[in-house]
Length: 195
Image (tube, rainbow, N blue to C red):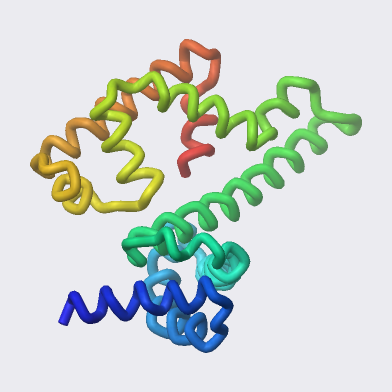
């Protein structure tokens, strides 16, 4: 049964990649509940979770040409949901920071504040820290934090124990924080980037 379900999901993704709107509707109907629950867990807001669901399926449709490369629909949806949720939260955090800056200073934010608000720079800085990780830590971090796999799924894929995955994640986060600190980035910014 699970193999048939997996086949059907992959088949749906292939149809969506070819522009089949009906396949998108079926995929949305079968997965919107899961996406909503995950988004609600991340955002802690029903309104934001609803916005995330819409954005996730819009992103899937807009980038449908790449769907034939997806082999695990659940991991793909988790990754997109996580990324969209974080983008929504970052946007809100940025608005709050900007509002606070302009409240304190009626003119313009200084150069340091502008740099902190530049999300692309923040992502690049974080990527530099990730690139410095030892090979196995980096692989585990990418599977769990970037691809949205659970610790159990990552353990199965890498053929290691779940406790080893947990150890690598803890060490990776410690090393990332250390690298960010060496670059002069506070752990508060790191937390905002990885909300």
